[in-house]
Length: 381
Image 1 (cartoon, rainbow, N blue to C red):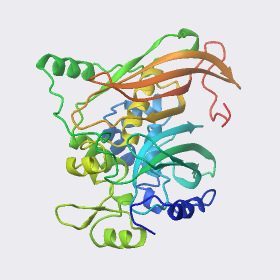
Image 2: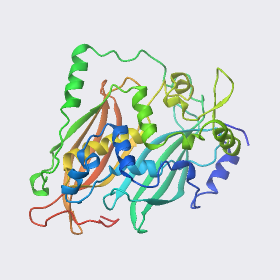
Image 3: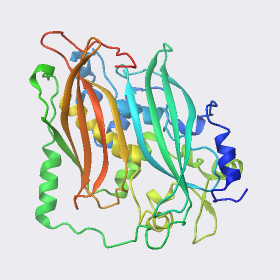
């Protein structure tokens, strides 16, 4: 097999794994949502909701205990299902989450993961690339299905983008002082529903979900994400452990300065490597961006609501220096089973008004007529 190339042989080897259980040890940073793990995840995404951070607040909430942000499950399993194709870059393309119940402090999980689909595609940037789709199921300590994640990864040749369509390095966006002051004001004024119930009857189609702002993105922000959710595990670890991993899996990037094998995800932190993989420079991590949407939705629904589904497609790289505005709009209200839910349209745009990510969500809300959200929800809701 040719390292770093997409061939019929490498495609066939990956396709043989469709439907087969996959090992996940390199995708798991934590197994239990301890108080420390919850706090570290919340810090890593800049989410200071007291529902995650203050045990007294959690105890007084409808859940009766400290909760974890739903996307902490990225730390239980990174949801990257992109097997085989040695030396071919993977770019996270999105997650379709379904949560059935709260994640409570000290819940622990096991996961089951399978590759469900593999599509060969072509486009302007890459003559041939592959979209791999996988599903991860999360079972708690009572062996109950707590959540599912269907995730997509684009597999692209490293350095294989055409010169005309690869993202060219450019000048960083220069904010004027008024822009920065406005961003800081909006970040510090982030609204939260908290312990006051947001009732299903009190929202309407067309209502806006209060936006949140994240940025300008820094390398420190990306490192905070890694520290909270992934460490270096799925990049092969460090030192000798990394060498052993790369010998087994051939998953690495060649450092052009030293000639040595390096982490495949180095482009998130190193502008030169980010350009080499066609992204134009250092850029964020897809699940990090998706987790910001989760923060916005939980701010809005408050302690009495429940984030049931979150489906986000990541389309444009969020470069170091970019600022994102996550926003949402209620598109429908309905009852599913015994739950009162609202459908939300989501989008993230940067400082140049470029669409960075988009998707939809389903939130369950308490009802003046029906009472609290009936948890756990059923998978089909």
